[in-house]
Image (cartoon, one colour):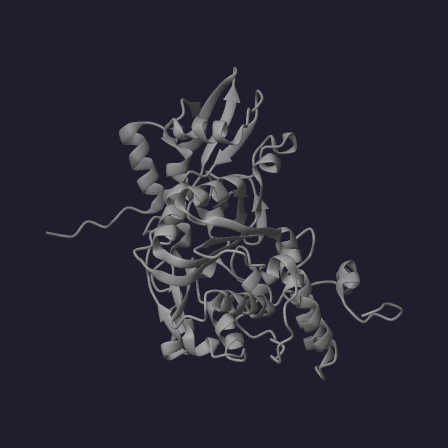
Length: 417
């Protein structure tokens, strides 16, 4: 008997709607992004210069280098445990893992000998290529990013732009009632429709935040963070959770200026507003509402230790020192400019610099994290430079675009260092 081919993502969505009627948008988003056959994240080519968007690790390896400094301090605060696990959730192709490990090798006190780096991603095969070049330094796992079947780790659980990929419920207030957005079929195509909330947890979330939405307001709620925070807390015996993502605290997230919500899509580096189009071919994402992520962590036993933007975090860890040293390196002009551009892109106030960094802890107290308060020691470490695995952000840019960030570049004529 011939084996039946599994349905693709769009076919599965159509099947469910035909069988049950309109489905909640959160279910639609889960299938569109993560369905094994034809889901968006089924292809590694989705992320990076040839894909639909790039992330901080791809912008410049100094991102990983600076994170390695924060990991060094975390390791020391935990009493220099061996092994010290770094569990990167949503590790993708391993770019961040490789950059962190390369820089960790130049840090003192034996960090690299104690470090065990575990890449975790729900997409088959991601992270393997980066692991093969490091042997025993890099442990690779292929597990669902929202599942953590570990216990008793002394570790830092790290993620960059992971939580924004969790499927979200979409809400709208209509005639004074809280409604949920569903996806239905009409004339062969998909359309949005409103219905009763699929779970009372949606109203409970808003009540917990003290949020009352006005008529016509549309937004999102990420319920998946509750279970995720619990899983992370259970995995840790002692340690830290370091989450980097774009988003806001609840007060700003549900402000009047965001009355149409934060959900958007990315296709070939363009932002588009049609989540029901190009199923499996475009990213669907919503900003992270960090207050609920903090609350979820606190209920699970994680203490909030720091909440700052990426601009502050990277400068506190010493980005300026790398910019100074890059200026003094004998590099060809184009290479120096490309590295400078990538470094500054990480802290651009209206770009990656506005991302948020949340650090939570379990079994750690009284620690002033360098990324939050500064005071990072000066280490004798090499300046990381762009490689072929990073995005060539300078390519195709006009020279005058560089001038927007000149005030961030140290050592200009007429300025102090």
